[in-house]
Image (cartoon, rainbow, N blue to C red):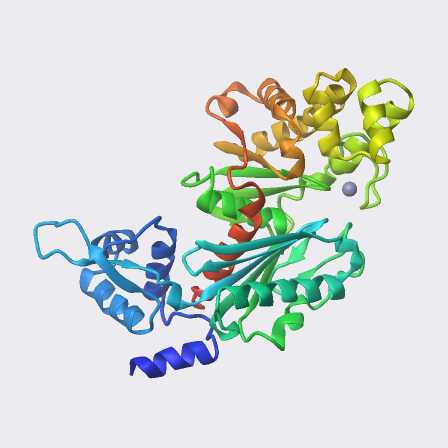
Length: 411
Ligand SMILES: [Zn+2]
């Protein structure tokens, strides 16, 4: 009976939410569609008979995971109604933990962001206070949206370190002291019956951008985040490519100078140690102190310290030293991306993270380096663009990943 199905799902969000592969594909295509979808389109996409699709759709309607609304275009026969994913199917809690921020969103199962809350935090404070605050924010926004915690179908979380995805734990994350092998999932277990899925933050940003941003419909793309750290996320053949242990795309620790400064990972001259926000700030403060840049010196005197955005502001008013620092960072990142282009042959490169907003010269330098250093065939149609979703790419990706997980049946 429908109420039994509904109460079972709401009482203890079962996982997976679907019963078989066809239901799984129906739900995933319904999620991926930017609006309502017709049965005939689903039939074409899944490649089973129309009657099979109709039968499984009926089950999903009864389970409350789909809802009918609007009429499909006529294909000669009787017009059937379109299918969508209702808000009442439940919500996904999407979390993006950055080096310096906590972002929590509620989305529909179909990936629409209902509410998103962000605040400053220091990941170095360790898992207990950070996860406590994350749960507080989640509880606040659930209350504001009048959503019962039992309606949370899944929790997706991005973290700024290497994640062993199957176990949902971080492995020796360089910038996250105290988080190594911390049981993140168990922190939610007492309050939420929903399963918790964890992945690297940049993987999820790539997924978010591929799903709902500038990478929509692009099957081979590379997402590069430049912020406190540098990371990459790879979409290959339409899927997130994680590699054997989940560390694919961890480009911040590619060596660009064997004689360079020691990185947080312990090795010298990693890209991250030489081109991410802290490196930009160190270089700017040095040039300010040495009297090379009056603009940077004035900002340093005013504020006591600089940040990457202050360097961007100085460049925007024509400060040569600030511009050189930004270009230097863009050039190093461009060199590494050019190597990746040779390996992956993507058709789109998306640059995100806080430093991406530092000014146009940063993106311009990345572009010119990549175009100079790569084979013409590889860059013939290779746009290099800024993230469209910006701050919400991470939570969007966390939502998509979590939805995919609860909609996948074991083979
Ligand atoms: Zn490193």
